[in-house]
Length: 268
Image 1 (cartoon, rainbow, N blue to C red):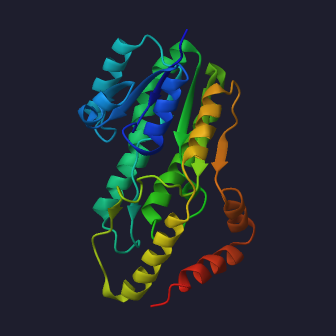
Image 2: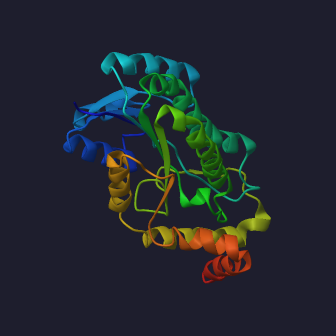
């Protein structure tokens, strides 16, 4: 029997690549998007409408999902976006939107589906986190906050669901070449005192992403997780994904000085 796999945010980036690979491997894939009609004709898997920031949309989706399938084997929480900008220049409203999507939206959808997993006494919940859930860099304070929150929530949930044979894991990629930057939202409230630093930081960030790896590595890890009967909790992916969190934890000063040095290479 084909496993049923749900991939949120399957219209682009990791989600689209992963959903295509899972379909190619013979899984029954259901993807989600806020506007599924835009991609439904160009993808080989079923696309359903879902806005994870809207509780009514989540409830409607939950009902529709179990018309399409009778059981859910794997939930892959992938939907989200990147909010860039200095902390003080980011409005509280923008910050709330970041947390509402990346954290609360993911939590609300997971909670909607948990009764089905518990009834089955089986299943996997795999969440696409980020290295930003383990470290934090300038220009991404609210994004890091949302990913740190996911780490805390799903670590606890892993313990709580063990007795139901539901496996909980999180993938922690570094920056990869996807559309996360082109689709990002930017802080609105520019403050003159930060002009020089902001310019350096923007140049540093552009350079960082221009040298980033292709996203295939993340998709491969997610595929292995789907097929792994007894996955562990966290899966760092990419260059520095294990080094930087360890360096920050054991010697924050060394980590801090390295970041400052790299940013200051772009003097203005």
